[in-house]
Length: 148
Image (cartoon, rainbow, N blue to C red; front, side, top):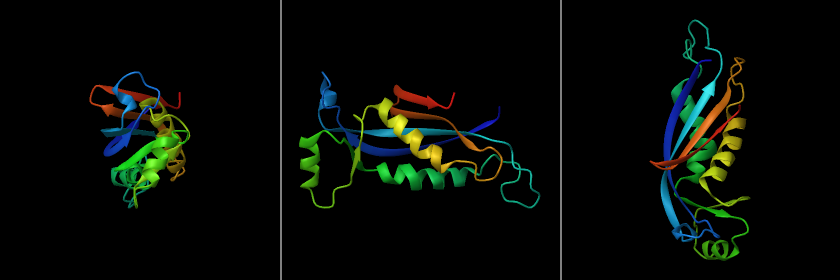
């Protein structure tokens, strides 16, 4: 199997409402997302993508459009975290992303995988698809989701 991986970064805030330690407080992270794609190498003479699974700049463009730009400098809040949702709603033009799960790195990785899986579905007729997504919450802590 041949894969390619593109890494991107974004900043976002969150909180884990029921957590026993400091993570229950509002805080933020510099997230790193690694997007691994699998597919056949494009073999089309004269095509800009010839010899590639997908051009890394196109991977970046799609990832930014569907995930990174949406979550960057946003507060990722659980839909049932009413106190924080109400507070964020009181801030004019605040960038808030409401999600259906507690925003742990595990859940955020699963959501990101779902979003990007749809974005990278076979654009070239080569079987291109999202194989794995790694979301680093810190340099030492991350979650991985794969299609295995």
